[in-house]
Length: 156
Picture 1 (cartoon, rainbow, N blue to C red):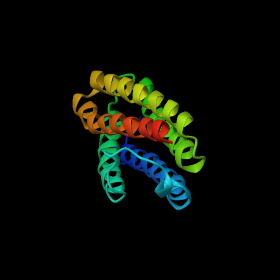
Picture 2: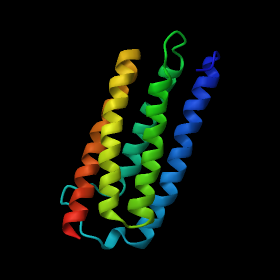
Picture 3: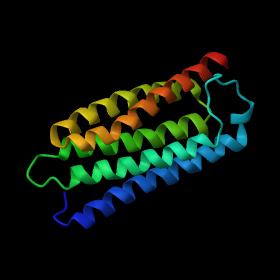
Picture 4: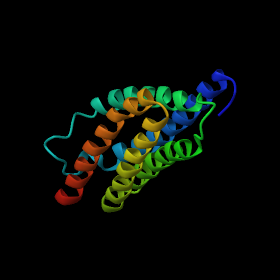
C-alpha cells in the first residue's frame, strides 16, 4: 500500500488498535451491565481468558495485515478491503452484543464476520501464504465465539 514499510506497519497497528479500543469500550459496557447475569454455555471460558486471547489474535492480525500491505506488485485492494471489513464487523458485533444486548442480531453479525474472515484468509493466501496462516487462529476463535453467542441466544 505505502512504499515505506514503516508506514504499512503503522497503518496496520493503528487500524487494529482502534478496533481493540472500540471493542474494549463496548465490551466493558456489557460486562458492567448484564454479562454476569445471563446464561452461558458450560464451555464459556473465564472472563480473564478473553483479553489474553484477543491480545494474541490482534498481534497476529497486525503482522498478517502488515505483510499484505507490503506487497507492492500485486492488486491488494480487495484483500485490504476485506480485512478492514473484518475490523468493522468486529466493532459492530461488540456494539450489538455487549453495547445493546441484542444477542440474536449479534449472532447474525458474527456469522457474517465468520464468512468475511474465511474469504479474507482465502484472498490473503493468494497473496502471501504466511499472512493467511496468521489469520487462522482468528477464524477459529470467531467460530468458537459464534458457538458461544448461539448458546447465549438459546439459553436466554
